Image (cartoon, rainbow over all chains, first blue to last red; front, side):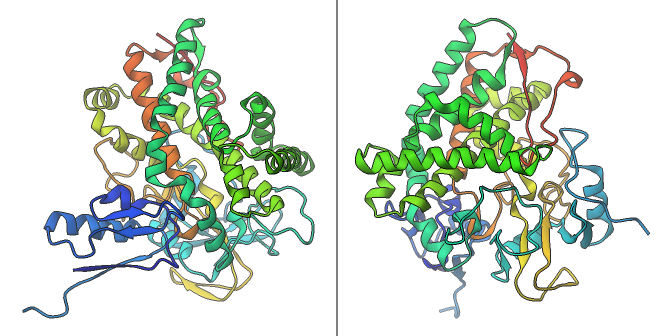
Length: 70
Length: 392
């Protein structure tokens, strides 16, 4: 799992921070998303990240599923 | 065949969308509706369609475009004047929003909690010291968000009667357009004077900080106008509607009182259930777009029936039921897309503090009239209560 954030799309609504503050924060300067943990491993955290992706109003977040299994 | 209804429609029950909206949602996915000026537009009633439309750049927020549906009359504009946030499209919108959204981050809003708590406590103190019954709207619901937004912006609260009067008139559909223009212009002129003053004598407030960052004075007046208007009406209406709802639903209220950790969830459910500003997210197509099985042509308006969409059976189980256990934030009560409410997290914090404090400090609070005696703002672009007599 790898989270990517498109800062050009981000409008600082804060939905991601409300959903999973351990993974997402906002820049003090322009409110855009700061990804604190770009590759969470815990299942419950990943579920909340999925929810954050769904809730993001500007569709700035993507969650890349692993492309291959080791 | 059913004749298409003319929007906007009034709610006949505070707890339900207009019956015609419900009928539209059941009829077809995307339907044609008529507007008071004789034109027509498309109506979206499904949550997924509204979310899709609001994230598609082929739908514009530019209210100056010919045919933009159900406009709230704005102040008369000069030809050179640029629209403020809500009327901007990309890429201008992103830059304008990022210039101010840092003031409204979750961190900033949490930092305001102690001050908001103090404001709420002072209003509750004053209400308790006053006569019974009290009107919750004038005692608490309006003053709290008004005090908070005035302090944040740096607008003297002494002027709040002036703003409340003008913003209420601006939103009333029955007030003639010229009077609505005049009301908007009053606020705008006041803002321009205030900002010119702050340019000379900066203070510790949002308007001064924007000036220090190089904001254009005229654009900042537009932004100040928008924030003040949004800060006055919407949160106030949610406080009064929320209090009414919880007083009428003892089980939900008991749930709130028993466990303070559910408060954010209760607030979210109230936001979904009332969706007080449902037409605000309407847009105009700037290209031909296929959506929900119809072809929406460039220049056609699209209206969002957000209240029924927030009860869409495809998105919410038993959406007509008020359920504090729902924990659902995928509603569009704050809109969706790049324009989703800038002040949403301020509203959340204010509502959470108000309900916790009000029911915590006055556990015996109750309605002083029967529910059918209440008078609702069913003629306003933002739904709410005119007054809410309560006693304890």
